[in-house]
Amino acid sequence: MDAIQKEVRDIFTRTKALLSGHFVLRSGLHSAFYFQCAQVCQHMPEVERLAQLLIAKLAGLKFQTVLAPAMGGLVIGQEVARQTRSRFVYVEKADNVLVLRRGFKFAAGEPVLVAEDVVTKGGRVLECLEIIRRAGAVPVGVAMLVDRSAGVAKFDVPVFSLLEMSFPTYPADQLPEWLAKLPVEKPGS
Image: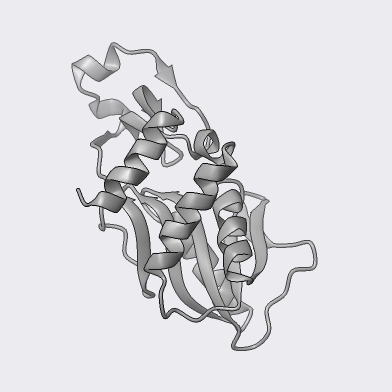
């Protein structure tokens, strides 16, 4: 683990954003670990630092707008946009799919960065990339705090993450005995 990943993990641990127990993830899979980014996002000095570290990884990437999926990507997406003096917009759920609402629009060819907190399988990121393309804009990259897939989630644009960690996940009918004995929590994303 390099110095940046160690610093990021320390921030997540100190703010109690990295939890251990028995959790049901948004994907429906079970895990003994959970990233609750809402915990770190209530501490603005930490959010500011995480955004600084993430922006440093984006060196040379050109974008005009940062797009984040609600809820998880909102705080880090807005802070990345603030620090880079970019426009910030977000997508939200309507009828269980992400949509661009509230009058947000993209110009043809507008370069857009997707910002997310934690990616496990990448479903919300894929939805964001499709929304950008359907609107005639150009997705130029994905920036995330935590790549929980440790690089397994693939996208057709450059990907930048501060922390890559892969914790085992299990379908509900294939839980290890030690995990099945723990009370189940679904903290929300």
